Length: 194
Image (cartoon, rainbow, N blue to C red; front, side, top):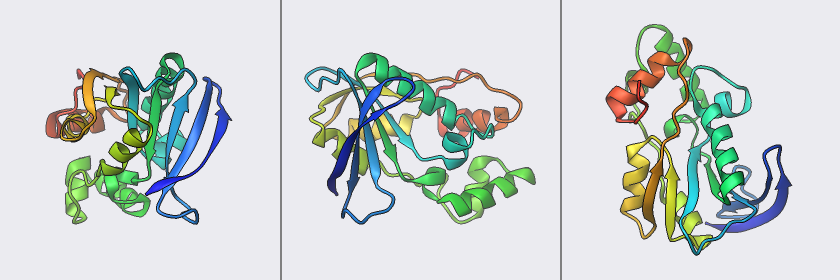
């Protein structure tokens, strides 16, 4: 994997440089890094490693808190010279089609973890090696990791990238996602304060 292209992207929260990473320039779904103005890799950088969630990020689904977390992370990055790494691993790594199947299983009473395992997947099949590569390519050696997920913290702690701080990103639960968030906290160890 390597840098394939980059361009300045003005957003409603600030200006970023978007960098696409893939094995080839023909890859239609590259991982991307949004690097904010004021980025300084010589000091700890606020970083969000965000896995794609089309339903939440693009369409505003209230079944999860993903879109809200992405929006809050983009604000933090814009304000503090940070980076948002957007990994193309939809549905905790099971893909959009299987994620929709898992949603249907959740409608029958299974929680998000049970639905994934019922379909034959791990509770969380995501990998973070690509994110670590991207951070190193950007010259980042220390991060203030924007996450509630202990697996992300552990993945970085096993890498050459030092986690100097963890910035929690707790969204207010509502009726549509409360059960999902409770499951993330109780079964996956996410720090959500619910």
